[in-house]
Image (cartoon, rainbow, N blue to C red; front, side, top):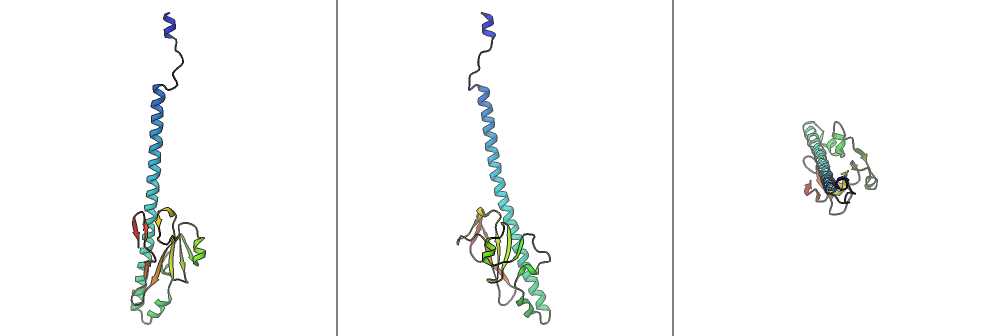
Length: 168
C-alpha cells in the first residue's frame, strides 16, 4: 500500500505550474505589444522632428538668400527668379526627389520631399502616413512659397496636424 501512494499519477491538465507559465507568457506578450506601440509613436515623433528641421532649413535658406541679394547691387531681381528653395541649400536632403507635378508627387516614395514648380509648393509625403491629419485628405503636406516684399515664406496650405501638434 505504501508503494501505491508514492507512485506519481497523471498530472492534472491545468496544474498550478501551467497556470503560472501561462501568466508569464501573457505578461511578456502584453509588454511586447506596449513596447511596439511606444516605438511607433517614437518613430512618428522622430519623423515630425525631421520635417520641422527640413522646413526650418528651407526657411533659413530663403531668409539668407534674401539678405544676400538685398546687399548685392542688382541682386533683388535674381532673388525673385529663384523659386525652388531646395536649390538654396548647400546639401539637399537625401529624400528630396526633385521637381515633380502633383500627380508625380502622389506616386513618390514615402518619406520624400518634392517641389511642384506649377503651384510653387514644397510637398512632403510622410513615411508614417497614419500620423498626418490633413483636412483635405491630401496624402502629402504642401507648403506654399510666397512673398512680395521681404524674404520668401513657406506657409502650410492646410492646417496639418501630426500626433496632435500643428505642422506649420
